[in-house]
Image (tube, rainbow, N blue to C red):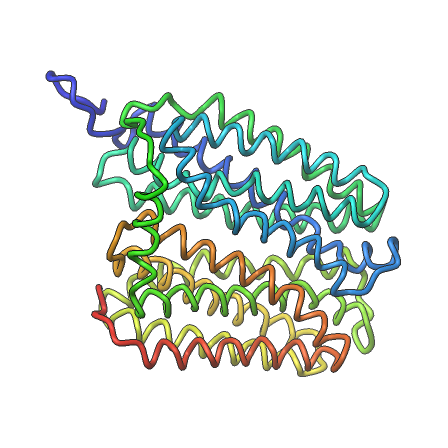
Length: 402
């Protein structure tokens, strides 16, 4: 199964019950996490009208949740070291479900935002610990394939939350849409707790404050890693801004599309399931930097094409933009671990911090550009962030770490 006669544990292997249960459990944990996190994105026009707030204020339902996640991902990683990966992930996702339920029910906009922040803070436990749990419990030869299964769960979870919540929100109420996604997430979380096998490769340990600061600060002394973390901050920021406000753009003239139809735009996410592994294969041949630069250039081309006032062009442009983003993210996230100088787990946590901090900051700021200059304002902000990311990557002095 995954051990030897001496009692040593080397992980679940493919085609065994433990391996299948672990992968299915982590897949469902990814769905539960990211379905909740992004379920309001397709509902933002409805939230704006119902609560009488601006587009950028409505987008705070996303930005504050991702801010909570960004803040919590590092503390959750140390909690997992102390109490165990699966147990801590279970606490995190069930607490998030409770906060999600309350966020969908409380009447005031400020209260919704407060509970969305708490929901995001709780959700940080899943991305902080899932890959560490996986790497400890599957055989080393299977870890990359297993990680891909978890990532596919996060992608499909984000897609599910958006395309389920928006049509229901338009037919009934935006709160109903969020509640339905919460119920789905609860089911996925319970299934994760029941399916995922007990940890056998985990050794609990406490990390002192001095050790924690040392592991983080060691990576932060690397200029190359700062550049990689900046990729996460800038590219994810533009990506979320584009998706936050595209619904507002398509709901207005000359498109005048209903929210339920606009939510189908999120199917463009599926482009990432193809471009992410493709980018990894190309990086093995040509190196990380060239693939990162080309992927970012594809993002820029895609977002600029959304300025064409034809719905089919906007849809194609969104697929191109999305594929470019996920390719760039696949390269940069892998590079964060490969170039780490003081612990890969800590470097990954810092990358995640930049990733979700960018989502919070620019996911909101894109609405300010929308209010001031319309859709072209959001587009040029997004393109500008990607151009800055390309410049930084071009100037970075670092081994390629293929």
